[in-house]
Image 1: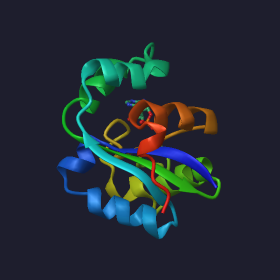
Image 2: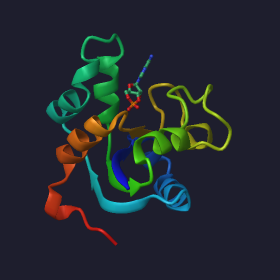
Image 3: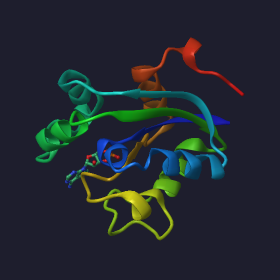
Image 4: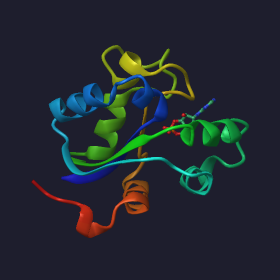
Amino acid sequence: MTRTLAIIKPDAVFSGKVGAIIDHLLREEFSLLGLRMTRLNRAQAEAFYAVHSERPFFPSLVSFMTSGPVVVLALEGESAVPRLREVIGATDPQEAEEGTIRALHAKSKERNAIHASDSDRNAAVEIGFFFSESELLAL
Ligand code: CMP
């Protein structure tokens, strides 16, 4: 079993998709280790997405990610990182496979409903960004 981090983004929270997305993840046999609703401030969003700081979409991404509440999920499962990326689909919902979370719920390449860690190493960093080890509860 490995871990990964998902963030249900403001577009999906605003449009009432939190329950459907969590249900989708549980049906895909991820376990919830941690869950928190929060609102990122600018410094947190800039730090979380620092790897994209030179990209042209960075200012808009930070502004979107701070525009409303997000729901942060620490998840556990078999090959959690690659499997979650499969379950959420491509960054651009137009390119996401049918039945994936982004194909079902995302609005655009930026407002794409959910974030998922892209490697085991980044998953550990991203989980640590939001949760201390003692907050992660195994079922
Ligand atoms: P995420 O998986 O959270 O990782 C980085 C985010 O940047 C991505 O989802 C999108 O929300 C956003 N993003 C990536 N590429 C683009 C793009 N070309 N234009 C706008 N936003 C993008």
